[in-house]
Image: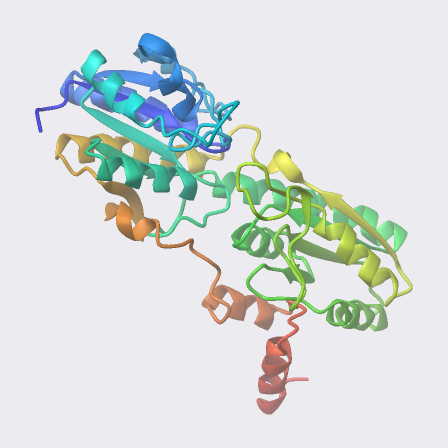
Amino acid sequence: MPRATRIAILTGGGDCPGLNAVIRAVVRSAQNVHGWEVYGVRDGVEGFLAPRGEGLELLTRDDVAGTLTRGGTILGASNRCDIFAIPRKKGPPKDESYRITRTFKSMGISALIAVGGDGTMRMAHRLHGMGVPVVGVPKTIDNDVRGTDRTFGFDSAVGVVAEAIDRLYTTAESHHRVMLVEVMGRDAGWIALHGGLAGGAEVILLPEIPYDPERIATKVRARIEQGRRYSIVVVSEGARRPKGGKVYRAGGGGDHLVDKLGGVSYRVAEELRTCIDLEVRNIVLGHTQRGGSPTPIDRTLGSLMGNHAVRLVANGAFGEMVALRGSLMNSTKLEKVVTGIRKVPKKGPLVRAAREIGVSFAAADGSDDEFTAARHAHGAP
């Protein structure tokens, strides 16, 4: 592989606080240390579909100046384009991935840094199999990319959830309501768990732990007996009953490009209204969790990951993804990343700590009851 002198970077999937920190770090590290040119790919892989390299733009220090605190991505993003299956008016979808290798050759690009979530990492893995020199950078507010302890954007999203809960507590207490706060988390409940703990929620519903509405009601009734006629319930958008499916506001679970989760809190609210006397309201935080300025933690993490991605390119470590392990930047092979997502361990330390603090997961499998029995066995009330 010839030494890289010109590299490209794209931001795939949904937007996320901290993306601009990554872009900025890549541009500045590549130029300061190696003297490389960096080209930004517009709107994720869609930029490669433009003719004659028109979807790529040379990024200078001036282009990334002042972007560290900005949310979103200055390059644009797309989560509705699969470069391996571009829809056509007639006939089956067409594989257009050859356009990437053609653009690389015509523009003299030596490597690609792909920033995104699990979908982008799967694409990067396939491109690596085609011979494209690619390095991945994990991005998602869901914090569910396998192979790394943390993804940037997650801390910012948790901050939004915690602040929303802070604001809802006063109105819930004033009006004696049960407030359901629906947060993002399709298959992994990291945002719900961390946001719920940070905000002091009484009940947290996770995709990993199917819930029973009667168990939510039991927690609410116990609080009423203690004189607390209000409760906060955090609901991950992927939460479900033991034999129930997820709730979609678009699609139905068969196509990741069109399926949109959302609205499970409405279902939970209806279920609760048959079990308790208090008024039940719900709020869906939606894309507020993606927007706004990244927290200092996400700015720092994005910067470190962008810098390490350049290091991997310089060392020819293609087919790898930047990974945070403890407090150190490392990398992991994309072939390991794409084997699945990183879920909340049902018996992990965070879930255990939450239960010991007094949080209910309304677990239909009785695991909350198991904790209660163990507590009584030690003489706790």
